[in-house]
Structure formats: C-alpha cells, structure tokens
Image (cartoon, rainbow, N blue to C red; front, top):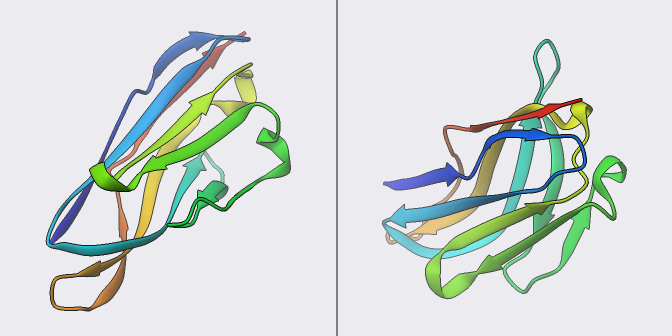
Length: 120
C-alpha cells in the first residue's frame, strides 16, 4: 500500500505565498509522474501542474509564472511553491502520483487534500 500526505496549506492574503508538500510512503518501487490538482467549492477538480520523474513540468495557464512544482526523488516528495496568490486560487489542493509498487503494479494514488484559502 502507498500513502500520499499533503501539508503546507493555510490562510494567506492576496499576493502572499505558500509552499505545499506531498510525501509518498509505503510499498514504493518507483514513482512516475506526480501532479497537483485543486478543487474549489462547486467546481470540478482541475489539474494545476505536473512533473515527470526526470523533472519535466507543465502548468495550467492560470498558474504560469506564479507557481513552481519540484520534487526530490530520493525523499519521494513533491513540492508546490505558490507565489502571488489570488482569491481565485482558493481550493483544496490534492497530490496525485503514478506509482509502481513492490509487486510491480502501477496505480494512481491521491492524497487527502490540503485547504488553501486566499483572502482579498
């Protein structure tokens, strides 16, 4: 079994910054692409950004230039640095990872989510 645990959410004023972390643990053989999604009240979950095991990244247009994704493969951890936050960034942020476990099975895993609230 594999677990993803997010941390770092909170309340911040518009223009402020937060750094989210996602730590993977359990029966991990290899972690492929990792990603951050978010879901605002009344809206569908949407992709924010993702990063491959080799470090290739892509971003949704609404965060380009403000958010930066990174990962530490040795620590099975992913990060999201969020700068110049806007009220519309308010959402629950979820970590997602495509993981090969020790039985060589591939599966997508999700964290429990962390709340980010940006006040105007």
